[in-house]
Length: 301
Image (cartoon, rainbow, N blue to C red; front, side, top):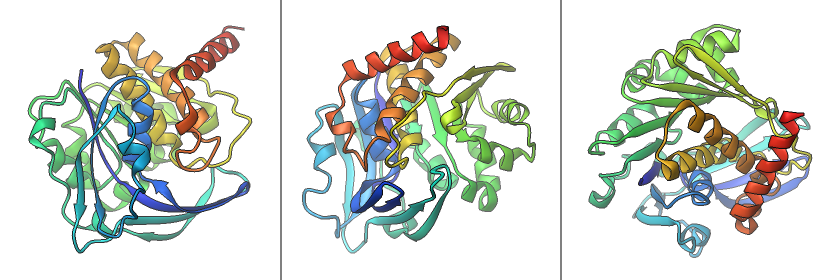
């Protein structure tokens, strides 16, 4: 089955307790696409400005699993830039600067050759834009979206409208609580799942994630990662691994969804071991499967 992602491509500067990396490749669709590519080919739709450095997108362009037909280099515009600083507790971070650039303009156009995509992931952006992009897809089999606190606070109505048009949503525990006003994450996840067609996944960082489907909560423990260099993109890598597995298996049963979440968690636990895509560039599917085997053995004890 064909898989498509649409989301941000950015130039990041990251400050972390482990060091600082300036002007590195980032963006939701970047991490998602690379993670999904370990399982299935993926179509990427995104836009950068004409200031995007030559060769900057080489990790994507050189990956045979990623179809970059949907990339737009927009004349007269600037690429999205983000500068963040992580605390000693890397679950906490501050955004020091955020220049939307092309992300504050009209969205990209989905190529005609991508309109038949079966599996679609709408990575984090304004829900009105996510809805607009979804409208350009003919008849997808599974549509999943991501969102964030900014849209929950400032674009509630468009977000509500989007939820009714998608099969699944992935968000973290603080966002689920913010959206519902319910401090009980399980109750919050069940409520959100009732607003989409199929399921909700609530991420809980190092504590794992929970799948909510048909009124049932399926908890997944977190992988005990010991090397955390840069958490940026971990959530997008989780989604990429999950959706990549689902598209490859073409199975959205509860068993498949739970296994897809586990694969997503394994990819995310590896991605955060270095800045940007550095760790992903050396990663193999065999390593992912090996970590999954180790994880499975742990949770069976």
